[in-house]
Image 1 (tube, rainbow, N blue to C red):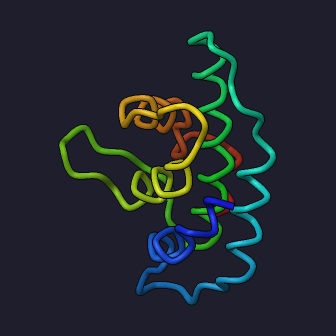
Image 2 (image 1 turned 135 degrees about the vertical axis):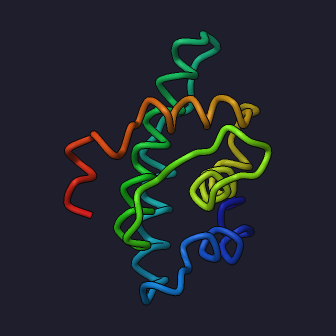
Length: 119
């Protein structure tokens, strides 16, 4: 599995000085999330839905294991969450742009999303 090749890079994005990472549990959750989302069809709306679902599930994992909310930046530098999502999604069957990921994070709106309020 291609995801396994990037395990160290993916888990590195979850490591912070604030929390102790349970790598085995985090990895299991990431693999489960990656397999749960079906690849999108060719239509743009399907790609948008696909990115939104992936970013949402990865956002919950990120928040649970880092204790911080997922976010994005409009500048060239990526946030830790953006790097995490890109690392998980780098071998997906369709090319995924940074802009599609940023837009999905923006729509996620973790600060106002009640599912992220427990973190």
